[in-house]
Image (tube, rainbow over all chains, first blue to last red; front, side):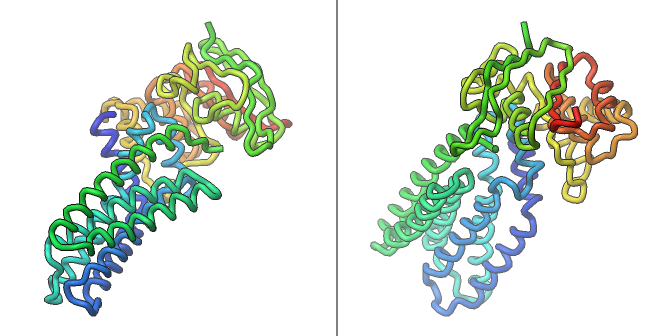
Length: 195
Length: 175
């Protein structure tokens, strides 16, 4: 896959979901401004991860049928398509987390950098896991969504387990989960049947 | 050698037969219109012919490749034109051309010139239908699969496609 094709798919997806992106960033800014517990992990981690899951679900088939058909008919492997398609929701989740942190910073209660990294890692991992729900239906979709929710809870528990070691463990665990979820998403896109 | 061969290719989903067993041979440069019993069957047949859907039973060969094993090779040979028009309210035409050119790795200037030439040959066809057809023909495919086109624009499609093999699916009564 050429860098140009990758940028074209990611750019088209981001452009198609620009309203959702603005909504995600605006709501993250509000959460960052109004959260009552300064320096807490809960609000950014849970809220931004939920935003990531919601934006991931918007990548499902049918919402932008012309993009779906064009991407599917292009000579691309499932794993290549997965990487390009995953970028849009990952960018949305990342921006939402950054804006949440910036809003906290402006209100004078910015979370520490380590906490921000924990929230970001969890948001990206849960977004990638949730992408798998878009290629499944029925029970498979609920399993994928349940896995995304479980990722958030597990990441939170790991982050809360203690200090720098907990933060590092959470970030590494999220990186592994996100990587496996992206591989799985590529496999399911390769096997996906649009009919 | 055929550019598209189907041998009892059928598509079933959750116990329901969407495409009944179908056999056809399409030689390079030839054109074929296939009448189907329903819109869903026509769409399913077109998607199997363009390697977008895998046959549940039977065999499909595009060029010398099996879409179940080498879908990417098949998609370099076959191009697909969907039934639905391009939503020009969501994506402008220039951006659509650049998008397709990037996906098929065609140079931007080459793509613009080729699309302009194809659109000239598709004169009279509404832009929302003309752009997907021109976009599909952009990488010079050997096989063009058109899912239920409007009868009025079929002559322009045939004229624009040069020596490319064409499979057109239609619902019964329109073929």
